[in-house]
Length: 308
Ligand code: FAD
Image (cartoon, rainbow, N blue to C red; front, side, top):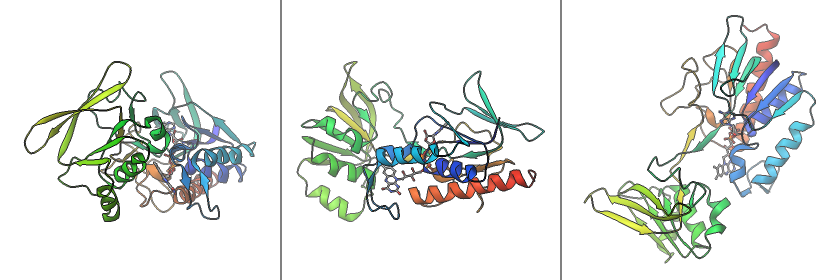
């Protein structure tokens, strides 16, 4: 067993693991996508002291840094599905129907993932026209017709970004008006290839079995349905914390974020948390990294003080 098991390989998890290894703590770090959300970002210009980097490069740098430490075991391709604590304080992380990892303390750093629309066709056509990452997949839709679902800041930024490559961009917003910043709304209004449809609920993603061919949406005022033929659907309706797999003993707020204190302590003894999966305000790389360091140090403190 490990002394500490870190669940999540994004900035928070990697930072926790490095702080633990530097204390000589034998640490395992599991995850299903090294680097986490960083992979979905093109230019990163607010990682203080690094004026410019790119997501995939930063993900590689995070791995290289963790790999410097013999006390860190990187375990890739592993999704945690359950967490429990025995009477003797040992914590078990379930990683599939028949597999589990045990540790004296755990740091949860599972971050967040894209919120899904939950309509028919969305899963079926995921990566066959339905995508969540304009930076990653935008270039695949050169000269094509696409929709952006969501008219908040990320939706508006996605629409402006896509307008540079796609033939047309239809923004579909559920509410009667888009909530994006004024400057983004103005720029969208000035871009002829962007059309904005408000007060509309997406009903279904349609396709031919291989690829997306259209979406169907309903005007929420009149009930009228429209089928728009297009090639790509970029879903930009926010992020949800990846905490659905946790037991009730780990308290979460109404948005599913793990509730932590200033030390990264959760409601389950010996379990700490950091980064975008928690209720800390402002979700950013430096913030997640700092929180990961805090949670790592707290886990170390917990072990050296005899788990009390
Ligand atoms: P994440 O990066 O989400 O990492 C979570 C990790 O946990 C991943 O490895 C994931 O695979 C793993 N995981 C999840 N569930 C499980 C499970 N059940 N079992 C095992 N592993 C699991 N921030 C900035 O500072 N600057 C920017 O320019 C910037 N741009 C962004 C652009 C986009 C498009 C997005 C989406 C985010 C951006 N952010 C930016 C935010 C930043 O990426 C996040 O705040 C940061 O990555 C959070 O780190 P984290 O470690 O908490 O979580």
